[in-house]
Image (cartoon, rainbow, N blue to C red; front, side, top):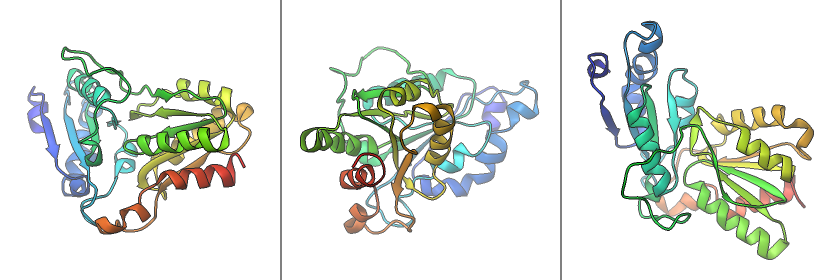
Length: 260
């Protein structure tokens, strides 16, 4: 924060999301607020890179993205593909605002699924713009982070086993968030499920769901449904399948609350 105030452009790595509390005042009160408190005289072009762990138990596997979304002054991004990871990082580095850049450790070995390759040259992905990763007609699934791939698996099963066509969108960013692509999808499908690896209670997905219901009330045939991790302390690696959302959880939620 001090280096940015003095004109620097720092990139900070905070290895595990769970350690965010150790830097709480700096992130929530200093990083987020100095630009506004100085009426823009002081700049804060800081990128805070935070990994969301997995398979490391209670103190190393938590998704605390909701905490940063709750604080005005912070931009929050959470890419799930290599292409988006590079493009969003480039956009964050070029910007003048503090950006909290989440990345899931469970995705470090995942290659690019949606484009032939990641361009070697420079490009940016707009911060705040979700993207359709799989077109569909009967149901919208909006994901944050690593749940994208479980949602895609659930969508494939919905199509093959039940004849339900699911459109899957990756949020890519949480703050800011452009609702237009989601509303366009919901206008077509009439139903939406939101999913992430954050604990369901207090998840930022509830804010997204509430706003979507307000903006798309006339287009929805059912209330928005949120699926998150269990409201537990994260368990050991052997039990993570019981904690983080699985494709079957999404199918069960869809069957019970959206499309029988």
